[in-house]
Structure formats: C-alpha cells, structure tokens
Image 1: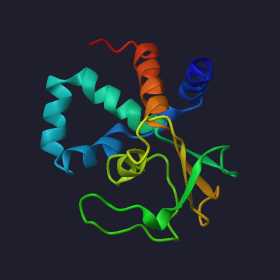
Image 2: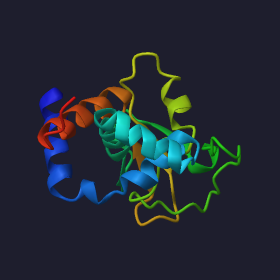
Image 3: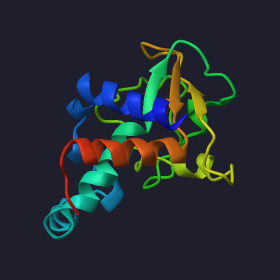
Image 4: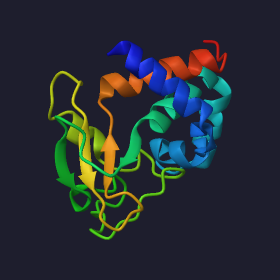
Length: 153
C-alpha cells in the first residue's frame, strides 16, 4: 500500500499537481488572513509547504466510486467560515479547492483510524465524483512531495 501511495505521489507531482495554487489552497487555513499566512510562510516555510502538499494531495476526481470508499453528497460539505453548505450543483476545480476551506476533516474524523477514503458526488463536474484521500494517504503523499521537492525542515 505504501508503495502505491509513493508511486501515486510521484505521478501526481510529475503530471502537474504543483499547478495547484498554494496560496489559494492555504489561505482558508489562516481564516483568509493574507498577512497571517505570509508571516507563517516566513517563519515556518517547511510547515507551510508541507500543509500545502497535504491540501494538494487531498483530492482527485473520478468517474467511479473507489472500492470501499464511503459516498456522500457534495451538498453535505460546509464552508468552515460561513457555515454555508455547498450546492448540489457545485463544480470541482482542483486548482483552488481547499481542503481547509470546508469541513472535509470532520468527515474523515468519523473514521478513527485515518485510513478511509471518502467520495463526494459532484454530478455537475467534469467527473461525477470527488475523492478525498484518507488522512494517512494525504500525509504520506505530502511527506513524499516535500522530500522530492527538496524542502528541508
């Protein structure tokens, strides 16, 4: 399983996962406070990059529900700042979809071992399912991405 995660991380890195905008992915982590985010980037660059890698690794789109993944409706997902739920017509944009902007972690924490892949129906998107990797997979991929990018602690 770990080999598969590492291979996936390498493939994603090679195929443009870096195209995802770290600032767009990370700004919600700081409550949309750009000054706070920029300060964190300065004083904790490695942590910022690692958290960005976690956000980059969080999702992928699929035409099918992965085996053993639990399925939810995208309209069950809530914006953490506004408390508003996403529309059932939500269209996924992986370049700006922030793991930190919505309550995805709450869904993951329903599974105590951190090893569950979750899936959200997104019928209006190019692919009908948004897949949220397990916490374990997200962290493994983030570790690998930061190692491959030569980011030092």
